[in-house]
Structure formats: structure tokens, C-alpha cells
Image (tube, rainbow, N blue to C red; front, side, top):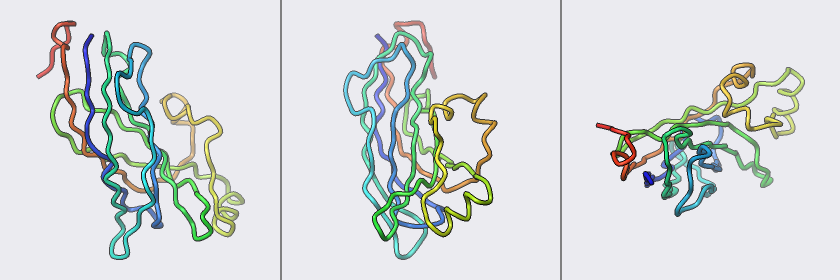
Length: 176
């Protein structure tokens, strides 16, 4: 079978409205894919900076996948949360990034967003904390459903990933 190795890190989050952030991630693959080794999901530590608007995580990602075809190529789904002074986690953004299909080292920026909500929901969010969350997060993977959402932009999560491909030419897939 053809194999894909994804090695790297979730390096940082920047341009979010508040500090004390952590990121939950999950790798999404198609039905033809199998995880040979590595974790399918994880969570970074809480990070903040006193001097700039960048939270450095340097959280490792190391996963080995096998497949019989390229349909359902891996995507990394993320949720970024803010930890307030009471220890409550508030959703700050959703994002999804496709793993590059070419071998080599890549720097990826995942632009995040969150549901906008009504005026009443935004007042509650401002004064009491929390935030509007998707009832069905699977909507993120469906472009036909995602465009119907009213959202606001949040920050950017950066990835440093190295992609290794093996045995793809044996299965009729050519790459440069």
C-alpha cells in the first residue's frame, strides 16, 4: 500500500483577541485510509506571551498513514480555546487545513473562525464568557453546509510539517 508520513509541529497561534490559548486537533482521513502508527488527535498545552500576540506551542505531530488511493487525503481539523482566569475554556475558533500532497517541508497557516451569533448571544458572550459553538462540528467538513454559517474571523494557527510519500508510483500515482 502507499504510505504517507506526516512529521512536524503545531508551532503557534497568533492574532487571537486574548492570550492563554490551547489547541485541540484531529486528523480527518477518507475511508480508504488506515492509521499505521501515531495519534489521530491531541491537545496542546496552554500558552501565552507577555510581550506579543503569539502563543508558542511547538506541539509535535507524528503520524504514519497507509492507503490504496488518494481519495480522502488527510486534513487537520483544529479547535482553539481560551482559558479564562476562572479556568473555564471558551471556544475561540475552528479551522481546517489540508496536508500538502507534495513531499517536503511545508509551513501552513490555518485561518480560524467562529460562529457570529445574534446580538443577544454576543452580549452574553461578552459579559458572561463562553461562546457560540457548532452543534454539529461535522459541518466544517462539508463545503455546502459551511457556507451557510455566519462567522467572524479569529486568529491564525501555524504548522511546520514534513510530508514523506512512499510507494505511490507502485500504485499509479505520480508526483514531482
